[in-house]
Structures are given as C-alpha cells and as structure tokens.
Amino acid sequence: MIGFALSWPGQPDGVLWISGDTVLYDDVRHIGERLRVDTAVLHLGGVQFPITGPLRYTMTGQDAVELIQLVKPRQSIPVHYEGWKHFRQGRDAVERGLRRRRR
Image (tube, rainbow, N blue to C red):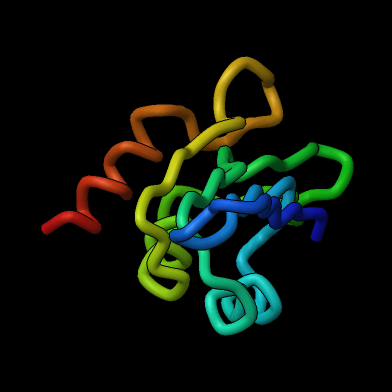
C-alpha cells in the first residue's frame, strides 16, 4: 500500500487521505480506526495486468463502498479509474457501486 494522510493547522474535520494504488486489505480497512478522515481520495479501477493474472493493484467500486462505510469520511472522491488499458472498471462501474451505497 502507498497512501498519504495530509493534515495542516486549522484543519478541523480530519485529514485528507489519499489511498494511492492499493487493494482493500486489513490495514486499509482499519484506516478509520487510526485516522479521522474528512476527505478520502480513492484510487479505483480494479487494475490488473495480463502478466500477473488475477492479482489486482487498485480497488474496485465495490471495494470503495465497503471502505467508505468503514472509514466514514465526510466526502469521498473516486479517481484513477479511466484512461489506461489496465483499468478493469471504468466510471460506469464505479458510479454504480457508489450509488448503491446511498440507498
């Protein structure tokens, strides 16, 4: 996992957390226990490469829904899911997953 939690003086609602390229695993699931997250920037797309088979390098839209429910950021921003052949989920799949969360 590579992620970043950014804070600065006068930031009252928690950190800006940028997931970076990672998958949903236990350490990521527990981010909300370690940090108060105001804004979560989530790298999605379900990245896979033919040479590594089913191994994924970023979360899917479904992973994002689970993570948002666990971390409970005030706002979440999906990014990094379009423009390259190695993305397995594009905007439509990500938006479907996030819409399900609001129901």
